[in-house]
Length: 547
Image 1 (cartoon, rainbow, N blue to C red):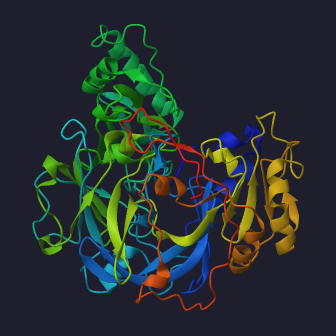
Image 2 (image 1 turned 135 degrees about the horizontal axis):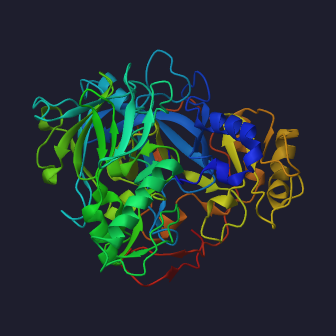
Image 3 (image 1 turned 60 degrees about the vertical axis):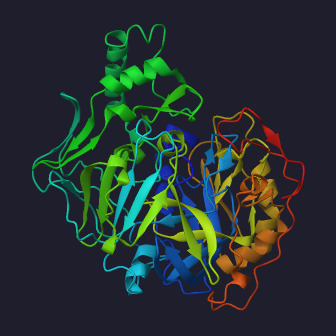
């Protein structure tokens, strides 16, 4: 669940819940197109849809942790925002060249076989089962962060004291409730909420969501406890500090206060009964924004209950899609124990504390190699999705007002399945209603090219979302070339010398079953965004050349 933790509900009036629910259902539906074959076009939308991509489904040889097999690869040809969140936010470099979904699933509807990368490695004989172990060291142990990912089932067995949490075996890792009894959410010895099995909201364990998000009613209990700690155990360190926890990356706390509260904060626990406790260490409440800033922000934030990177931080955690559980195996201990199959499939994970725990970033990366000869890419390790997506070397980004640091409001529309939706922020006085606003005017040539009619949502003077009739994605990929892109997809990583596009023509093992070349898109304007390439540099670099 990528790119932003902004809720779709923040974009609409409260009386538009029906429209929001409909759009959210469409955007969150992972299998939005059925029976995708090589050479077909696909669409992917992340978070509430601010980040979307359309591309071509292909296959090639993939080397992931020294496990090698042919796998499905989605080549992104057009989109709205870079696939990797910026670090530091918002002036920093995009964190990745692509994304690798670790959940078991498919491009489109699942037919006879799963198409995610790990499933392809199993099918190709490189691994024996859809199992992997994620080990993340904490910032106190190693300021450089990161850790290791171990692919395949281990012959070492699970350590004593391992806690198995039942999850769904297909799709994202949804935490399953007990068949009887309740799920108790606690903070130390304080009960925050009790869910019956019927009330349980099936949160996911997601390495692509920064920190820990929870409904406001639960967060209120956390804030109350943090204020109590600040007024007592940490009184000297937290004088005149207002302890409120927002989903706001600009909110900072001094180091002495944040570290003191982290030390005293009790763990957040979902008790599923039968000794099945999903625990998030209280020490993850605040994180240092960059390794050299001395400023801290909160990784626990309001939103839907999601066990993000804070639930994995400083731990060894095994994801077993074959048997439907996540095993919390204890402390990371420097990731010294190799839990990969045969001890042969360890890959290094990267991400400092601020990149991993920030609610607006939440990115853990690893290197993979695709093609023959192999091309190297930095990709996000995401247990909240199932596809491997890389930028095609022709990939372009579309939207309005791109100079304002690529903020999500600039996307203004999203592609979900084979429908196009518009977003409208009705609280903004500068945003006119459709079809008279800047976004509609920008996209009008695309609508004319596709011969689409316009529909607006119900309720209000200014509909919260609007949509267009369905269209073939292959036609959309051609039609969008009439618009002016604001950037190539990996421009700011390219400026920092870190970008990698998939040069599919250079791979002798690339297969797409589609002889039609990608449509020629217009050249983007000169790239002039300010980019911080080094998180510990005070220097703001400005590029004035086309990228």
